[in-house]
Length: 428
Image (cartoon, rainbow, N blue to C red; front, side, top):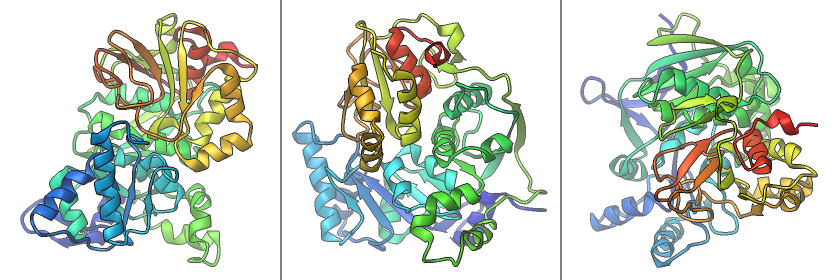
């Protein structure tokens, strides 16, 4: 019997199995940010265990509230900052050099096919787009990871999603993953790996694959994962070119992290997306999804384009193509947050920032702030946001606020109309 990519990664990283279905894996990366890691740091210090297993394998960033908005968040940032300096963690991205963790870490080449990665953040599953096993963990597991470089997991069952057909113009990875979550439900992949495969996924950019994997957690998944291919190699090439004689050699090495044709799956689902329409959430769960056409005319107060789901340069380009030479509705306010300094710089160079400015958007520094209702775009009670983020929980972006999740294209069109609107209306 063959093996899935997750099973292959487990076999290559297993260091102990202390009791049935407890697999202790060696970690290739431990990622940290200023919301969850300071709790782990202070607890380790209180236990007299202020150590790190390998400062070169730990990467840290201040991204959730940046710059600090009050004394409490400033203190959290100080704890992470001091800890990184104390332990010689070279890859620490402070204010001004920082970006959204699940955008900046892949940009820096910190993710490779076959890696094991943990972080105290549920959307760590994003990094599975590179053919890695990446999972969000709680504080205790994060502490062990920091201290010992290992983490324990149950053996991964896998659901395979085979995506066929061809996405229509105006339909994007965000629409696809919202539809998949609707089909699976928020509990449909609990404690499982979701494999995204098929010709539609093969044709996607790394940015789009990251969007798919980012929201695997919203169906209960531990990790979303894609097979590494030449698209993966091209994305990573600047960081791996000294390790391989050619891109073909890199592809040959990374191809071992692909599921076998006779691998055993918990479930296999096929999707033909040829007729898929732009999608949007309603209510307060990510599996409450309708077509944009069904939600058309729904009033919103704020539009937000950004986050670890849809704040990359591809996303900004899509939104800008709709916003060019247009103005947002007087009935709404709109915010865009490029996910990293690199994205911001590219958007500036390509004239995208100017397009957003002229349309009436507020352009902010890279931050997670609005996504989780902490800064840079918090909603008032009763307000509604059209957002490219990943969660529409009750009060997610502000107490009493409602969030409709959608693609950057739909968000841009909604900004112009002032109500939920299909982007094809504004395409040239």
